[in-house]
Length: 207
Image (cartoon, rainbow, N blue to C red):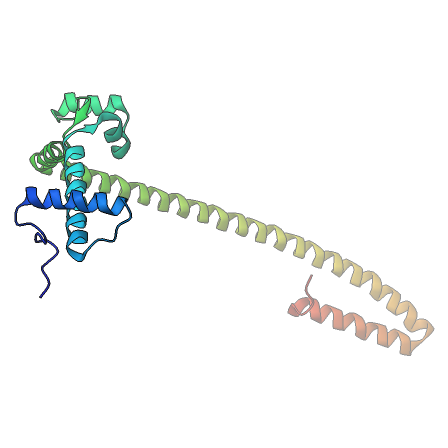
């Protein structure tokens, strides 16, 4: 049965395994083929190096990098350190200490933050209500404009109908003249005028 990757494969102590990993690393750089145990030692050692690098970085994050990660300018970070007592004012920042202090601050002010969040939600609801009222007023104004337009159109139709009545009276005078000349033509003309009058009255004739 092969040994687990997390256990030393060629040495029983970490220091001895580190030496074995370094030997394997040198051999790999020289182009030599590593044994299974040597490859395990080398992989383990690289993971240890990576973990150590991350740990050291988190213990001393450069101020500029912290500002970039937080999306805040140096002055804002320094102001937060002074106002709230957060450990983020030095040139290098212990990220674990900073995050712990930040979450402790949030926990100690949870009620105040919740109240502010509730107030913010109330403001959003009020703003939404104001927008709905404004939209309703706009719709009412549009409807009023449409009604006014409809009234103006109705007046024009009535005026047109009156004009047609006057025109009809004139045409009927001509119909009587036609009737004296040719009764058949005059009768047909009278029928046509009656038909037009019926269409106007019934609404069949639209303008």
